[in-house]
Length: 236
Image 1 (tube, one colour):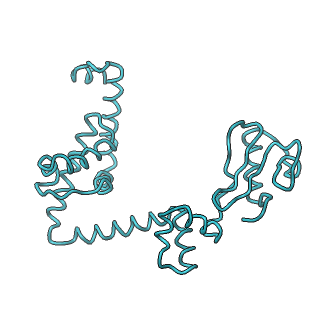
Image 2: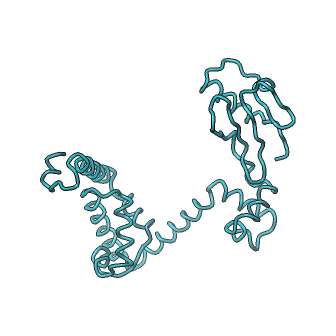
């Protein structure tokens, strides 16, 4: 965290940039890379060391206006963790009640994206346990009904995200219609639950619906907003 010159790994990232993007056959860090405390007047690259709130990065004289990452930050480093606790209410809340080592481990997992993965896994396991109860026939009926709705919506030209959000909005705005989708029982589900229903479909079923949706949208672009359903079918 305190070093001002690039590490070996960071130097390799810079070297690959110069070789792969600009075809430079020879790279001399002392000549081609300028960094705090070690300026190089004709350097192609200026290296910016890692700080508690930033990742290591560099700019290239041949790539005007762009900043490139020089590698990952120091996940779990005490200085970085302290900065995140001060600046992020989420991180501060997650670390409440933990000792120093536990807090560093949790913040490191949070930054790497592993914390969300673990939470989703726990949620999935809890949902799996719920569906093993005596109401499984109702759950299975709801899943199949929602899957049929999603297939129909996507096949008629909606994107998958639009179809998922439609179910969410029906739960809030039209409980009666929503009840028809979920087997007659008003029980709102999350968008992630509906996405799980969609992903549980066979791959060829999803692919067919998406291809039909794409073809309809392309036909609509060619025919214009006043096109009839027959014209859209013919345009496909």
